Length: 198
Ligand code: ADP
Ligand code: MG
Ligand code: MG
Image (cartoon, rainbow, N blue to C red; front, side, top):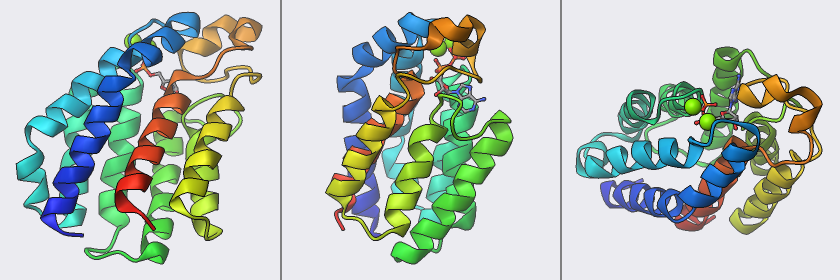
């Protein structure tokens, strides 16, 4: 992946988060504290501000640095978790990854998020999108198909009862709303998939 591509990916991700910040906030208002849109926007704008610095690094180092920046700037529960995702991806990925490298590294990164969050699939969190996306990637699906898998996975958090994060404080009242972190994850998957292509 060239430096130019990485800068483009960062801009695309930051644009998507900015365009959907209000939607993410509304989702988090229903079953959380209403800051997810702002948290994500703050973090991705901070990454955008230093896109040139990240893009000049080899991919593994760039991803680790982006993860560290996200931990420092997103805040909330999601900051350390998205940060861990990118840091672990950087730790595991090859400098010039093929699809198999990306898939394997992404799998390890999801495990790191689950360990950090003491969470697992089925608890109405970002993991409920990350894991199906990994499986679609492993299954050879196209970027467009993977984006649809991510959207469907975010939709599938609606009937779930939250067992981790703030929404879990609501118990059964968390049922009937989409998880904000699942939605932001699906947005990032579609955008990055489009930018990376096949
Ligand atoms: P906070 O809840 O601290 O205000 P955010 O609103 O930014 O933080 O992020 C909330 C999102 O973080 C949730 O929608 C969920 O997807 C994710 N999340 C929270 N706790 C966990 C956890 N333990 N494991 C995985 N994801 C989590
Ligand atoms: Mg919140
Ligand atoms: Mg908060």
